[in-house]
Amino acid sequence: MTKKEYLKEIGKCKISTERVRKLEDIYEYKICETIKQIISYSDKSVFFDDGSRILSFSEIAEAENDLHVDFIKLKIIPVVDCGENDFIVYHFDSNSWSLFNIIDECTFKERASIDKLLIKE
Image (tube, rainbow, N blue to C red; front, side):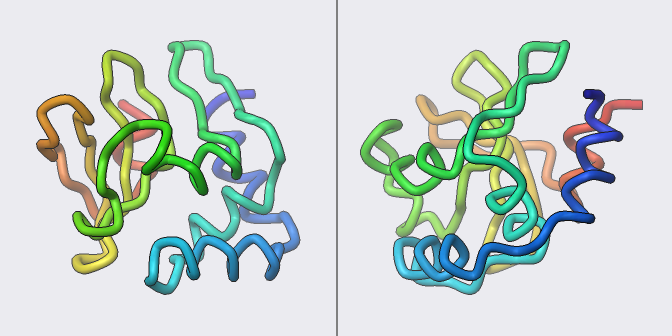
């Protein structure tokens, strides 16, 4: 599956209110529609040919413990592992997306939608 196909497919899936509620409780913010679609689409990671992958629901839910980053304090939620400690994250306070390095805890390439980060044209 290509990234474009994936983004189209998640738009068709039924939203899991249970998963949405769980993540909203963990992250203490309302989850945007795109993240609702991502966590509802599959229980497992979705891998792409460039080595990046969509995190599974459990990885997103456990990200703070697994990655040793205070995502709640930073007001972000990781969604895509891009390799080399870089993740695509959603910013709750600005309703935007960016790349985030978990070692340096820095953000870069901020964009209005995940599409602009995921699909490099």
